[in-house]
Image (cartoon, rainbow, N blue to C red; front, side, top):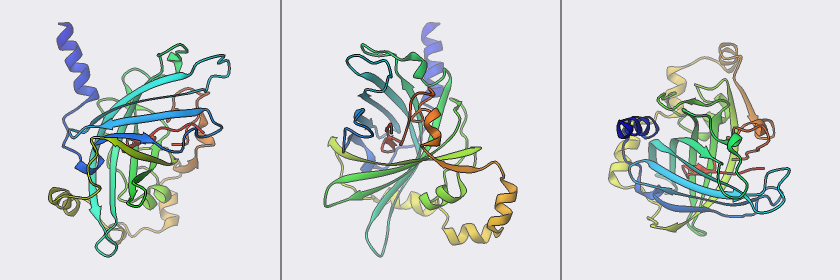
Length: 267
């Protein structure tokens, strides 16, 4: 009976999913640490081909921390992943939607009140680019202001980072610009390139800005009138959330990520 319950829970956290483009798989470690005021020390995640990922990190965020670090692990699903190659520049980009569940009840300084609420997840939209000269992946993330039930798919991410920045996420009352983070692949790395299957997915999936405009010719003023609750804010205001982080004392400049996909970052 316990096994059946466990499997049911896992089916919510890890629902059926398609494989992600190969270029995003492997283990990625954040670069440029320590970040923020020197309190964000480490973050890394491993993206699996089936869409699931796991990660971990540590830093010194507790106001009453006297020794050691605050440690966390996290997991989630990367989905709706699309790899595209710019025909004029050859630049390869990757975008995806990814979920996040964090556990801070770890190490010498556990902070269980920072955990993602039971049965909930955060949802991010990630837009990834890659610098071939430095082998560094830059992840730009946007997320909603609230958690969502594990079993709920809130909808599709905007086709571009610009659209996410200007229009926000369709499911979120507020959209947070979680900033850009940089990662380097440190294990099981794959060349940053789209394969044939990725190209087919891209052709079948995204609409262009021009198509979007033709399908939705409303003006910015009309959009604003239709969505008066949509506010795009930066992470100075989202300090009350987790890496979202859920605790009001935890601050994010993230997505982390992570993965790549992702990214974790406390400002």
